[in-house]
Image (cartoon, rainbow, N blue to C red):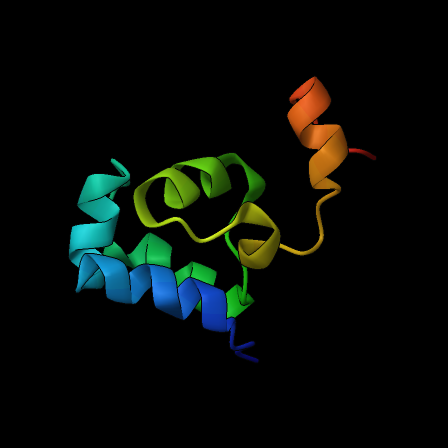
Length: 78
């Protein structure tokens, strides 16, 4: 089941194509971005890079993370 994340779609649009986004983020290929789309979120370890490139806040890219804790410790709360 695909979950739409409007913020992720905005980030993708910033790059123009899935391939361009994957290259900019130094990922293995556009399929990685397709998987993010399917999941409806960006994995925590990639959110800050997407935010830096696009200005789309990490909180909007993945709402399952306690971003205050993550930014303070660099770890995902269990």
